Image (cartoon, helix red, strand yellow):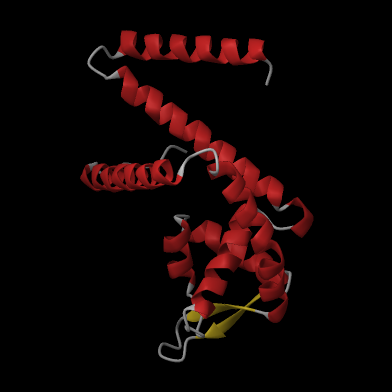
Length: 185
């Protein structure tokens, strides 16, 4: 991004805040700015994650499922996760998770097994191929995260972690208080 692009971006963000304040004078423009900065940071992190996976043929969402399953194994749970648990861990709808599971299964990276305790459910587990794929890429992915957050001191990272946790908890509470609405079509 050139210096001119950066100046234009800052100008545009300032205009956006003025626009929001004109429409809603009771809204704190700092909250709007923070929401926008968080969205931009989250989007950039997502793009970096996607880009770091180009050589694997996996999407970031697929990689996260494989990593969750590997973590499950690492903690000693050899039964795997059911799709609802995967959906909850990923913060993604069950329909989206179902499509991701199908694609990973088609690629031979995961397998479905009937749950030993409840034969109406099935659990998802890594295949040897899926385990190898996530292990082969994990170091590169973690190094990328390390590179990004190295811009912050250890103390700043701890503060950011606490702040993000507080924001997440508040967002969940606000969501719980909001009336049920039908999503736009």
